[in-house]
Length: 410
Image 1 (cartoon, rainbow, N blue to C red):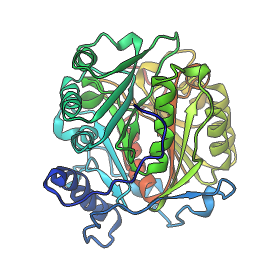
Image 2: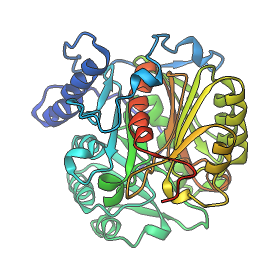
Image 3: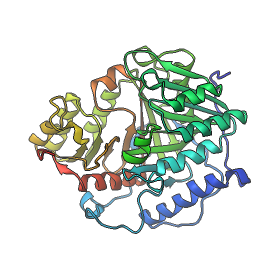
């Protein structure tokens, strides 16, 4: 039923069934866009722009925006500043990419990840395919069941260790096919592919903690090529039962133009993701900022030290549970002069993000560890767009400003 095919492009229209998506994702995005960038605030077209594949030989730098951005210091509001415009309004780029965050404050209003995901799923017409590491948020299960009963093709891949949770059992009992990863390594992805056109991915599990208490980020990308990449990964797991080290390398599109951005997708372990990250660090010329739930990679740490030695501004935030963990690279980086902090969220800072030169964002499910690179099934999405990078810099800045310097014990 789910043979691999190039998905058809589906365009948003003005029918009643799309009002929620238009209001939640476009109008709010325009407000946030205008706030950050002081550009023309006229509403975008209701149809999505076409995407084009960029030749693999073309350097991503050739298509990246060269718009100068403020330095980190001028870009960061002081800790505790009451900004009248919340950065948690989803940011929409040219009708093609939507970025959203959870604030780490327990409130539906502070989980724009949820507030963008729900309309996306509600408006699915043909298919919803998901690979979700952890899933206990039952309202999403109810929504998936509703769409399944409406005739939408729904399929899920989950991590076996978490597969006895009620939300997953509800889906299975309703007839939704669920495939479990029974390998010892984790199926650690958190993504949906909707109607062969929309991909939702990032660091957010479908759990109460991730949606309402932890710091997370997600992106929605409207592109048939990007969706084809993720759909292929889904089929590897769903049909071939191929996970982690057994996954073939078959990503169809290397670099895809999506609106103003260039998007690249990697899957671990088959794509050698750590080597790609080391290359991004080496190619940076001005600054590198990161948010790390787990960071134990010696190679990545050494490359950051080298970047700082070359004069780059390098800053980062570690999840505070890493304090005192001998495998974590927080204290090593601090000892080498890199300004790193622990997050202040009483729950968890769960994002896995790098920002390079105010232009490139690296995010997804991939922690900076050997397990993520060599064993788990993971995904990374790299977005080269200075305006999207600035939105991530605001999120980084907020978490960094409220953090505690490494070396201060809790």
